[in-house]
Length: 155
Image 1 (cartoon, helix red, strand yellow):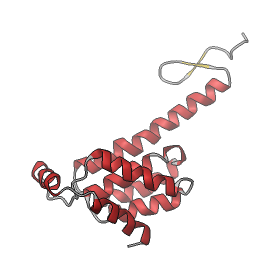
Image 2 (image 1 turned 90 degrees about the vertical axis):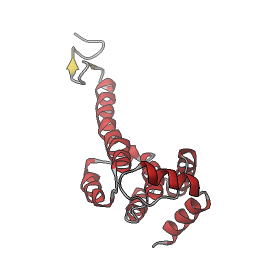
Image 3 (image 1 turned 135 degrees about the vertical axis):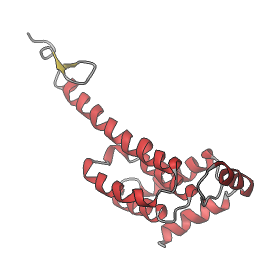
C-alpha cells in the first residue's frame, strides 16, 4: 500500500464508528468491510485529499484504484467522493479504467457511487460541455441538446 493510501486509511480509521459499522453490516445482505463512517466524515476526508491531489488526476485515480482494491466500503466511498471533484477532467478515455474497477465493487452502494456518482456525472458533463459550446457559438438548443434556429443576431 502506498504512503498516501496508508494516510487515507489512517484518517478513516481515526473516525471509525464500530456501532455504525455493525449497523451497516446488518443492513446489507452481502458481507461487507466498513469502518462505519458517517457521510459528513466521508466528504470531509475526501475534501482533504482532493486539496492535496488537485491538479493530479492520474495520482488521484491511482489512489482510488488502490483503495477500491481493499474492498472496504468506507475507503471506496471516500475515494469515489474525492474523484467526483475531478469530474471536469475525466474523459471518455478513462472509462475502460472504470470498467476494471467494477471487479472491486462489493455491493450495490459502491456500484451506485461509481456509476451514478462519477460516471454518470461525467457523461452529463460532456452533454453540458456540448451545450456550452453551442451556446458560445450563438445557437439555441432544443430540449434534447440539438441545434435549433440560426445563430444569435442573424437570420
